[in-house]
Image (cartoon, rainbow over all chains, first blue to last red; front, side, top):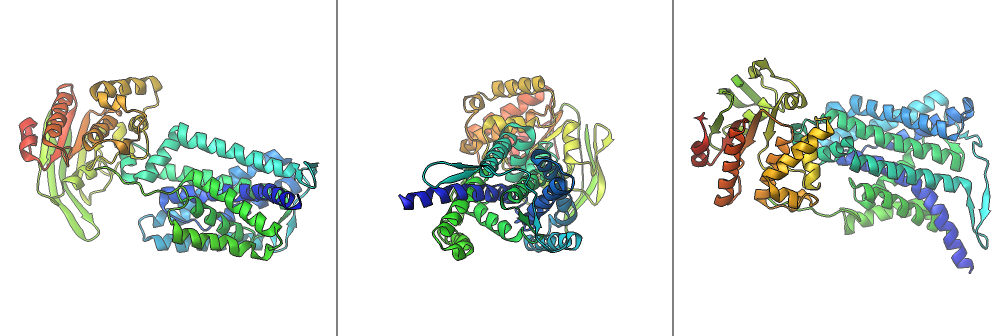
Length: 296
Length: 205
């Protein structure tokens, strides 16, 4: 039963890691859906979110939930500001210009933060005292893992509600389908794009705070790798498709945990990018992607 | 009701519209006829505020709306049914209609408008939960018109409503346009199908 136990334990670890990837991937996919931009600064928004969580808990002494909400709110504003200052002026420019700008914003945030708080790794305070539960055999689940999953699922449900049931969500889908037609409905395209950046960035911030309480350590360049991984997750699910990003995130997290769990942790990162290469060769539209043909 | 005064529109260096003026009196159907590439669609898009003219003015109900944001123009009662329908294919029909009433905050009013649209286009009611992309060409045109009517426009701009439709459907669409006009909506119609357009128009440009 040893093999089974390792598998189940890594599945539990993978779901926690996958939650983080899924939350970040959602922002990638939503922004891509609406402005066809791979926002490479998104991983750094996640890093800022983690630092805001650190600031709130370690310096202000707040508890978990207020810290999470504050970080989400501030990053929503940050996302909107980035869009207005960096991407909006380039909306009519070739896509490569916006892409390069996104990389620039990413470096600016990462190294700006380093300038501000220093390059050293910070340790998150123990906002939540760890409780371990033994399931059976040697399999353990911690309360932090449960909280990560619960917060992630709650945010995903909220997102689904916003996208499908509210007028702003309908406007977001309309704008991502056809900007000009959406404008003719009286939809303010700029505000709708801002709302998308706000929502995506707040989800990344949530991921940042969750990672802080899970792994305890944060640093100014922590956003780069998870940012790229979440990008892989978004492509895996089908970029622009919200359920795709959720599934892709969880899948990637589980695969990585399995690879590490079976003693090949050095291969963790390569495996993620091999998945990217394979998906681009075999099914470039992603798992949930399909070629929609419209009748004329 | 609508007055376009000598507008000039450029796409980069290309001078797309070289001085168009037109007038649409209240309660009439005015049709704009011209060859492919003559700038008809550009004219409509300029009226709706999607494109800004370099010079010239657009007046709607005696107010200057040149350079005003599209959502503001829609709010004032001027809506366009774009060329090629441009429905939201990946959304169900009822959501397409809801989006047509995006600026209406009164839920009751929206529900009433939707009822009226379903009454006029019963086929949309039958399929209200279906994805708009699964509709036939004629049904998509009806959806595009229904969606525009959700904003209760006083002036409706129609860009090539007959495009790609069979002669029977074209007739049906045109009789609906006439009916809408008789019920008080002023219409500016852009058409390639000149014969059909002229048969219902009060005035041609």
